[in-house]
Image (cartoon, rainbow, N blue to C red):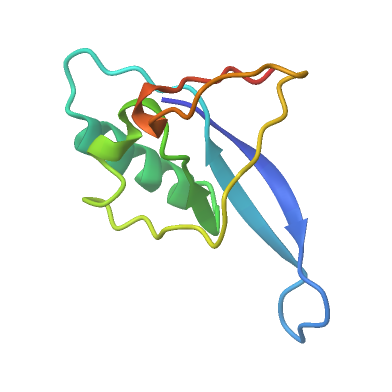
Length: 99
């Protein structure tokens, strides 16, 4: 399991000036159930002082998102893949490697 961080600035708040967000990156599970693996990732993120843990509804992530009470985001993410044309796809069938 892996995740990365992108700092976010909180503006005009008397107590908080930033949010430390973790983003799920590359996860592989061959023996450990997805819910157990990602529950451990959440504990690890909490121990490292992350405020929030984000995961997209791609690949096998649907196995744990609802069970671990991930909230649905407020919009759709749009990826622009250099003029690739492709049909509508089910998120479960999509894998995207960001480098």
